[in-house]
Image (cartoon, rainbow, N blue to C red):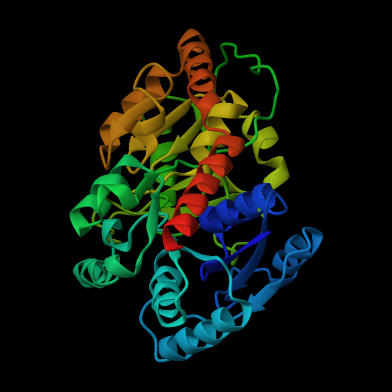
Length: 380
């Protein structure tokens, strides 16, 4: 039985979802998985993480790691190196940028092959002022990386630009288990129910969603907006009055609109909740390969999205989703307006369900297993 040690600093969002799905699918199938996590972020639920890993009989090791460069980084590397030398795993799989850097440094010191999944390279994040620095660091650890798993074609090109040989690059998009439900009934109605799923912050474009609802109603397109996954400091309620700003985020232009904010949505309820909306809106400024995309397609709900990250790897504009180029707010407005037509929503929903069929958890797990086998065999 081969042993894989996974390491992740950001125990939240899509990276944590990916790790949970992956270790759950692989553990016991010729492999035993153990996990190193950090619980320094406020959003992390330590009890839930421990409960999940305990339910799978997977050992959990805690090594504190801070987001971004921090004084304790070398301490984390030394602790991880010591753990690797004690456990002697066949392979280390590092997830996301911070654990990716620290994990690969430790793997080099311990003589353990390392697989790295960026889940969106940090230098592809539009609001990060240190993107050039991160690019420099990523180039510096290419030779320490036995294999890299990229989840989008954008990441594939980025890996090539960093200098990874083709033989070490593996394109494996995220996958999910299908809900197995028929497409929901779609009919004409007077007002559209728009849904947003994503944590608070610049990346997911929650501010754009609030502006969108405001502007649509101002232009006579009746709609209601509901947000899931908003800032934890917001109390879970509805009909909260929000301030929205102009494109330059200048408070000189203030408008107010009612948008329901419902806090986080339990993972096992997401698809069911999505099916209650007419359109799911994803105005993200950057992405890796978002699970919300796959879940909405599987739920059978039309998507209106900005074309970022791996989104266009899955969907085609006007066939399986309504795509708009990043930050094209007017294009987003026009596409939502088009989706008032129930027949178009039915066509997009059916196209989306067809597009998501090949993005299965089984395919993701089996492909990752193939990378592990190749990496371990090459080390021998």
